[in-house]
Image (cartoon, rainbow, N blue to C red):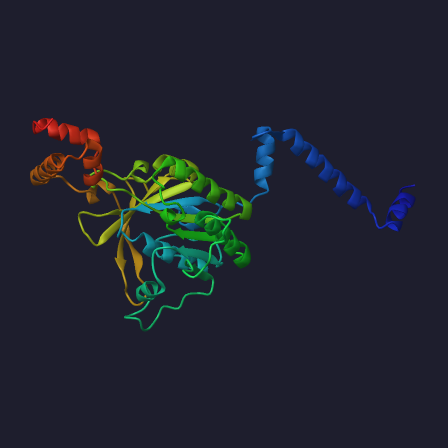
Length: 354
């Protein structure tokens, strides 16, 4: 009977395995329909684990700072080398070669570097010796910049067309790694929650839709350089930090102006390894035709923070008083000097200016 049944199925081009596969798919669809509760997907813990087991373990793209499948934010003050490090990370991934002192676990692959900071000539200057003897990038490194002659369709805003173009670049190159330099170009006011939220939602949606790994660069407003870097130093910190998977920052050393340190701010795929007690110390150098971060050693953040002297305090008090006399508000003075408005208030009270 079994042989006859199989023969009858084969007569119509259908086998037992085909029926089993179809039945399993129908069962899966039925389970997914039951698990969908409007905004939520509801499953037992065991089913979540079974689903997760089918996915690969995320690999490091830049040590424990950035893993595959993460939307990661790298932030720092201006002129501290965000773009230099980002290009170096992209170059590392495109070649499949780790940066000395840092880990890379993925093979070479295409990366899209959206450069909204430098012109092509400025980029050339960084990766050549006086515009000669140019560094040879791998063809996996794909640099993207805005086309000034592009015409925005009448029915689209600049931001809509930019997002459409970004998605088109992803689909047509097949790249799974994106570096965006920087976030403020995609949204003009990332420090405002109402603008930061849609931006992060859009990047997260792209990440999930195409299985991307995204490194996005962002600025910090003026900050008190005597204090450790925290998530509050990122513009639009609450929304940006809440929606990203990981984040790290570049700090400037006040013990040596040539040094920078890297510090983890948020992580999901690992423990916090590079915290205030174990930051990565680097120096920016151009040994030949490639401007880069060179790993020096590990250290503590406090040995690189600015130490306030009595002279520093006197200068700060003078600046606060001067801005107050110009009619500036406490918050405006704080933003200008990189201190809190509460500290401004204390200084003015101590100086009998309030």
